[in-house]
Image 1 (cartoon, one colour):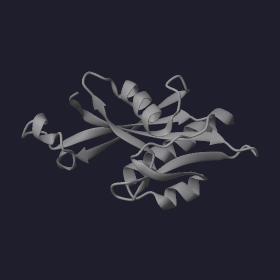
Image 2 (cartoon, rainbow, N blue to C red):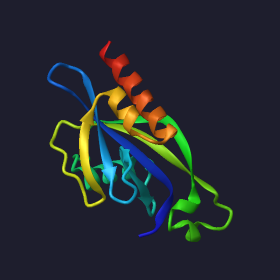
Image 3 (tube, rainbow, N blue to C red):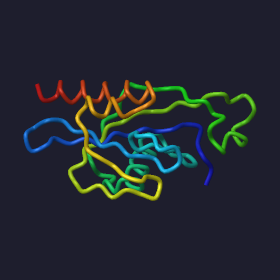
Length: 149
């Protein structure tokens, strides 16, 4: 399986019993950072297909769950990926496409994470490190709030 030259970031979301939006973040095993589901495309997958597969693998969320494609796209240094050598010497950054996915079922984390949690928007923003992740979560919240207005 060849690693595609893109990354996906997916934020599971739900409404709490009182109607407030909550976002699921995962603490990564490798760097102990909190983020949404993240992973790379495989072979000829589209970003949308990769988002569905990664979310099923890392969080146990059904591939048929409602997925929102976000406009947020971030560039990530290619050098942090082991597959960079196969992409060629002129690939310096790859795009990270962002999504939201409705999570009405129980989360089942993979071996890539040590824990997960459901957080308010403000809590989630305070836990995340990368500005691109924060921008994508902001966009998701804006889209969801507009839908419910």
